[in-house]
Image 1 (cartoon, one colour):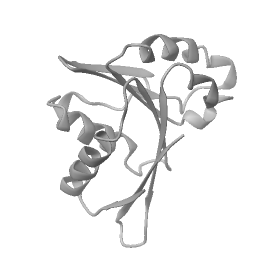
Image 2 (cartoon, one colour):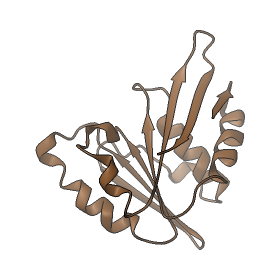
Image 3 (cartoon, helix red, strand yellow):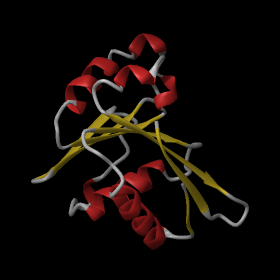
Length: 144
């Protein structure tokens, strides 16, 4: 399904619409070029779940950021800086994704060898974000 967002307010609305489609536990692979808005999408998602968007930071250097509210745990991972030999993170992902109220967003998940191995752990989704020439974000949502 394709959504469009011209600004952050519309991104908040798109995140809310997509949020209703997730079955927990969920792993969401975020795909898009550097600076396209992957972390901005996670901020909007958190905002829709009463988690302050000011607390949501890119996990580029921390690798994993975890945000909790009574009814949900949002895990935000960024694999951009990792090499194949660093992908010990996959085991940690399995641990945090097993929580029944968890939604795990993974930026640069294509660096993992085989995402299908997570199908027996959680529901899998992919969100692809691109910008067109008018600087409108095109957000494609699909279940894997």
